[in-house]
Amino acid sequence: MTARKLAKPRKLAKPRRFAKVRKLANARKLMDPRKLMKARTLVNTDKPVDTDRVLRVIGMRYASAALMLVGVAALYGAAAYSRPGGPSANGRDAPITSAVMVCPGHDGGRLAVQSLAAPRKAGRVDMAPTKGGAAIASMTAPGKGWEKDTESGDGSYTLRATGTMAAGLEAEQTTYEDGGDDRGLAGARCATPATDQWFIGPGPVAADELDLYLTNVDSQPASVDLTALSGEGPLDTTEGRGTRVDPYTTRVVKIGGSAEGLGDIVKSAADLALRVRTNGGRVTASLRVRAGEEKGIEWLPRSPAPASSVVVPGVPGGSGKRRLLVSVPGEADARIRTQVITKDGAFAPQGQDVLDAPAKTVTSLALDSALLGKAAAVRLVADRPIVAGFAADRGSDIAYGTSTPPLDASGPGVVADNRFDSSLVLTAPSGAATVEVTTMNATGKSAPQRIEIPAGRTVETALAAPNGDAKDGTAYGVVIIPKAGSGPVHASRTLSKGKDDDYLFTVLPITPAATTVHLPGTADSQGSLIP
Image 1 (cartoon, rainbow, N blue to C red):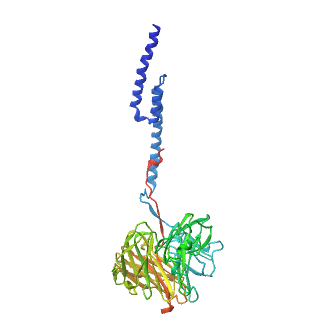
Image 2: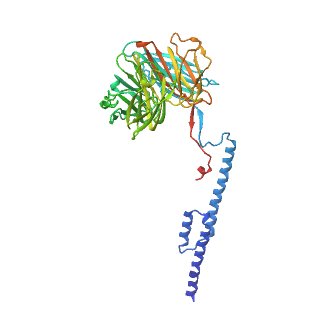
Image 3: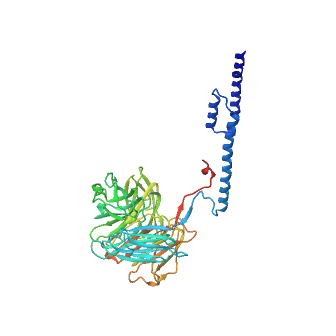
């Protein structure tokens, strides 16, 4: 009898446990899987489980979470209601309030700075030696410019700007020598620090010296890797890797003349595409070319990143040789459609309408017969990303150019140092355009000059200082603003002096002045706040 009484509870307990399991299974939507597994573990023991208590605990947990979500949603809604701009999935443009540029400076010459006009005075611009020391010039009024002559042998100079004056700021270094080994006009845009930079131009075969100026404006050391492509293909070498540039210093690397400058392998290159990358920190890079004794000097402009569609503006008119240089950095050959744009229209050069360029090489194309002495731009459309530029010689001087992005109303063209004989070469490759050109210096500014550029045409126009105040070689600035509704405009500035064999010149590709920076997009989401 006692045994039967003890057996009965064990037979009844088993159904009760399974009934509780079914009750728990019906509540699965209220539980996360880990809680359910824990409950199952409990009911499989020999001890009865208080399932109602388990459900009460779980219910309190989710009730607390629900209350938390209600609170977050209330705060989120209030913030969204009070925020004027709302979310932006595509990001937004914000005004630039800080800028850093480096002028190589080692060989002396004229440093010139031009700022854009702003509705209020806020900010400051200082030009000082990179290695440290007092500023050689400062500026606090927007819409103004200044210039300063430096001595040969000086180190590089770093320009730092803050506030509204940083937006659209332009700085250049220009040298003029009428005799000696460095005879010629040479100009360089003062460069911004970067981690990946391209140059395309002559190699050691076509130049007596190629000096790469690497400047570190930051407080930590930078490490630089150099790679290069030539007309014969890639220059594969481990040299040129891991070059250290100490903080606030400029290091000069001789291309083809040192291990840091790619060593002996680069000496046989007639044309060169040079890539400067950092694997730590950032630097500004400037590449100086000395073609030969009394054959001119020049700075190579920095090229944009490789792209499949590019426009190379500002190929100068007049006598002398003109060569197009194209590099294909990728692993596959490129097929490139070529179009020359002059004042007479756009056309494909006879026999040169399609250029087949091998991968990892630099290809040269003579333009003399196509240009016939006319100023021009070259438009290239490829099935692979390319880097493109030109080399020009005239009289006893040389000049180089590269592709540029188009100017627009938010990024006008600004040139700081114009003197001697200055002219703009403007090209509208795909649609008619109208630009307003204003010159300015310490005496004031000129009335805007309106220039119309027909579609598929190149227009060259002479520049003049405001009030005719340029006879003494004083620099003046120029601002080029495309009008609303205009097609893309690509521009360059030619600075020249002398005639015939005494003709000296330099070409400056004009890039859009940086006035805004694009901030990445964001989107409102409570999900990011839920643990």
